Length: 235
Length: 291
Image 1 (cartoon, each protein chain N blue to C red):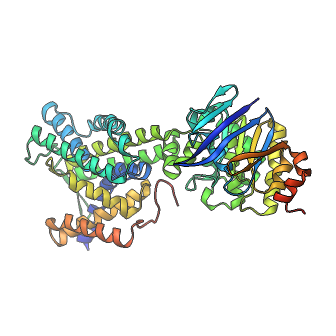
Image 2 (cartoon, rainbow over the protein chains, first blue to last red):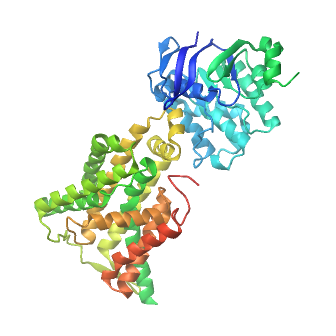
Image 3 (tube, each protein chain N blue to C red):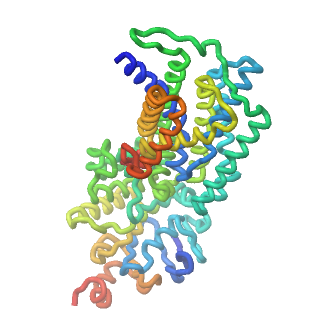
């Protein structure tokens, strides 16, 4: 098992958001997390990346407990998050943003750049532009590209499709599948668009009000009536 | 016409020094989001270090500049780790009080050691000047200008072309984004504080050869650094240059047309107007590299 999260509790101030969440990811697996607004998906990724300290519970990554490690240590171990709101360095060029992604892997910045540019040729074309001048879709590519620059074992993507045109989303999905095929990276994709989430993943977890309310193989969930009714608006 | 040209050249020479002098203030503000009220007294501290070395050991202030920088660098790291780190995450007001207190401590310590007399570093080339067409160029001003320009360029290159510099800009632009790629912001804060304080002390060496100083001139220099930072917009080297040149023009022209006594008053008025009308600065940008 690559990642074992068990009994995770977390929140902001006095407000508990995650309630006893347990999630597993195997080597090479793509896991989707979906659920309505405020269900704790983004909070979950924040805790995984180390940006938010959990109240309790354990996170085992590659056989080591990481819940007390700072984010930089987790990046070094192979976790990378393309975060909500993307958190790009808007005043830096596209290429500089990517380079910063290799902060923990500085010796191989050239190879990493080449690799990311083959997945995202549009970033190569815009490499001299400021990140702040990119379109939403390009910024999302940059955010994922920057996360890939650290050579992660586990790539976590928050709100893959939020605010993006359908054509852009399907291109992103295509690229993710390609990355997975070529590099065997495991992924956790948080996604509101349930059909998309289930399409690109092997397994999925359904979050509601901070709890895992359902989980299973994506193809099974796609066929399940309760999922169809609640999330796919198919009656 | 010749007078105007002369004043313009004087403004350029002085303004470039102000740009370098303020760079550390602007940098710590942009990256750590703190306003260091002790900044001016750091500059004065540098001036006294080079004064001491010159008077008692005959070391030229230009030669002791790297030493001042190093002393400042370690002092900056120490102050950050021991003091500022502890209050930075609390109210912004706390940092103001802390650095205001530091300013008082440094000024009074200098006063105890050196007394309040005006000191000056009388290098042999202090009074030399030469004619360039219609212009009179004072050698020491030209030297300070050239060094300020070179040192400012070095800081620019450090920020733009090195990993350390990029990590500083990254933290300034998006602290959480920086953590996501594995940068430890608290380390960047230490380096930035070191760099900023180093610049302050190093610029003190230059300040000391330009004019006389007393232990209590720090407050005025902090105001100048503040003005330079808000005029250009926070953070970037280009902004500091723009702000520095603005202050140079302001001081040289007020000094010439209204009298020396009006210079500082003019800076205060300018600061007031900028805060009121253009709080984001002439160039509109904030922080290193933001557009």
